[in-house]
Image (cartoon, rainbow, N blue to C red; front, side, top):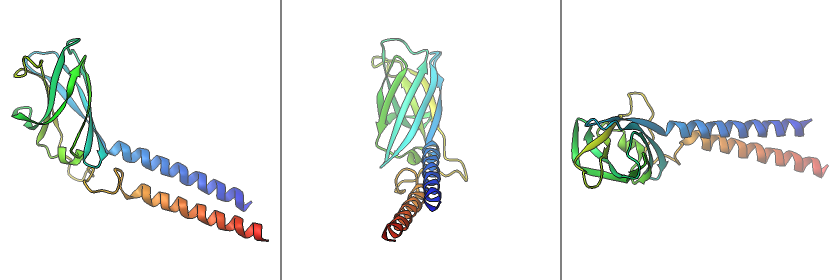
Length: 181
């Protein structure tokens, strides 16, 4: 009877740990709307995911992009209405409306309200912007991912993992005592 209870407790802790990990991962992702510029008809989203260790994955999906044309894109300081023309973080060229890049900066650092993602028409026409989206600032009271945080998810999963380890150890001790009898 005690062994069944112990197994049920371990299963419950494992499910809680998995739920905490998946919820924590969702908190470290934002989506930026990219709006068409200069009559391009190109718009879409950029999904930014904090990978920890001062790295952010940027996945861009644009509709209306020309097929087979490499389109430069960058993260710039400023906003779409007042963009610093010098790119801060280059992104992989958009190809057929898609790209994926890992940049060497935390998501929290990008969420100051002073960065935008900008897509250019082509390498030959880099001065023509076809889509842009402002990376939003972390809202007041919102817990943004923090640089130096333990892992990418914080202390809750570690606490739950420690509780699971404690239950496993306790279960082992109970079984050892039973075997000694």
